[in-house]
Image (tube, rainbow, N blue to C red; front, side, top):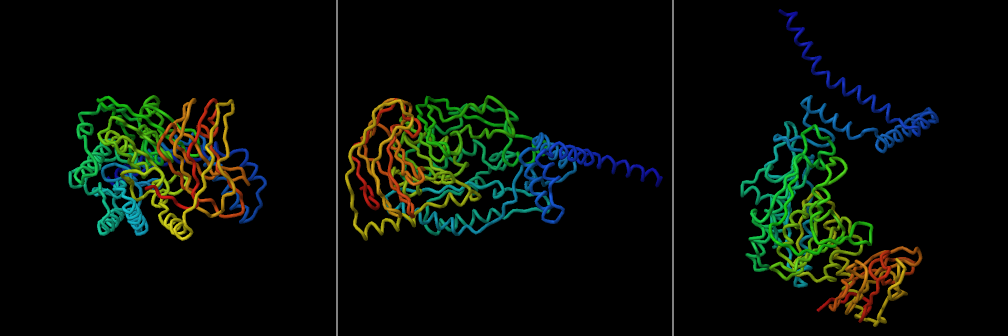
Amino acid sequence: MLHTLKAKINAKTILMLVPSAIFLVFIFYMLARNVTGEVKETIKDTEISFYGFSQLSGEFEDSLQENFYQKNDFINLNGLTTRVLGINTLNERQKLANGYLADFTNATDTTDEAESIIELDSFLDDHGIEFLYILAPNKSAFYAAEFAPGYSSTAYQDIDAMISALDAAGVNNIDMDAWFEENGWSMEDVYFITDHHWMPQAGLAAARVTMELLSQQGLAEYDSTLLEDESWTVTVLEDWFLGSHGKRVGTLFVGVDDLSVYTPNFATNYSYSGLPEGSTTWRYSDSILNLSYMENKNYFGSDPHCIYLYGDYPLQVVTNPDACNDMRVLVVGDSFRRVWEYFLTTQFSEIYTIDLRHYTDGTFVQYVEEIQPDIVIMCTNLTSSSLLYTFGTAEYKAALAQTQADGLSFIDLPDAALAASDSANSFTVLCTDLTPGQTYTLTVDSTAYSGGEDLYVQTTLQDLSTNKAIYNRYFDANSAETQTWIFTVPEGSDTYAVYFYAGTKGHTANVSASLEGVRLYTGIYEQP
């Protein structure tokens, strides 16, 4: 009897160890395949010492990271092995009690973020601009998150601290975590399994909550018929999406996600323009859906929820002349704002979007002063980059105080015109001899434009010493409204000039454009 029991135990133990043994064999095989010729040469030439071993270790790791043979298959097998062994954590991700993936985010001090929001709210109030802050919880901070035994997260404390601080300061806000709890939404109703973002149906709900609040406060009209579930056709792409958490653990640890694509059942008249990071080439479309993500499934190589509003661009503009509100809204936020904003476009004639993680052409409050929105809405979660809370209010106030101390002065610049030519980079110089460290305001009374596909004409602060563009401003083309650009010349000994491009830099061939009523203020000129 005892012999039989031992045999059963040994057999069970062996069966449990089989996946681990297979995995270890696979690892050694993959390591052998991934030792590149470069690393082999490094091994041969490495000094036999502690320093030499450290150098070898670093180069070997770099080679594995960059040249890993069938890396995605390795990630998948790793996830499968971990799952078979009953382990709930892998690669800094954990499987919650409901099988969903989350990270290990814990509470941090949100005092600086709250103070930045309060300061921005005060700045906007002084300029007669309404403000709304929408806090979207990260999955680790969701009210119903159930962590694996032995693990926990205190990230929910960030939400409590932020909302408490904003409420105390009288900042208009929406706590979506609290709304989901009050209305009985579970994690399965809100989040993808393998990603930290909320799903489209949660974004639609958030858009409804946003418009209900703005309507109740008398800040905007609300066409609720366009945000009803029945107003949208939902196409479900099954097993289509591997989220950011899932890309770290593979497709076999908890599986993959479906992706729901919402298309309107009503006629639309959208105009979309977006500026990708590091580019002066704007993307144009009459759709705010990037349907290319519906063509090919690619778990590790694509981010399909960018189907909504294309992705995280530094700048985006969506116009909807059929909207019930003839208003300009400026949205600032992270990737959580995309699907929420997708539905919000049904309600406003103009929505400008700025992503401060990628925007490098000045400060946020400078852009606010430039485009003069009716409402500013921030939609984000608290685990995003601190760059999202860097608004430049202190810099603006300092420059304004200096302007008031020195007095506002200006010079009228000659009107600028560029005729159509074969050049792809046609420009003219508007002004030179700019003072380092000085803040300027450039105003243009009207723009005229013809040819090409661009909807904008570009001005650039150019460092003549290095021949590099420092900041850019994209003025609406064919506009009879006064447009403004606020910029600060960097400190130092370099020399700078302001260039004017027909169209946008690198895309000026066969384009003619002009600027009229151009004026350069020394200091900040605040529009009346």
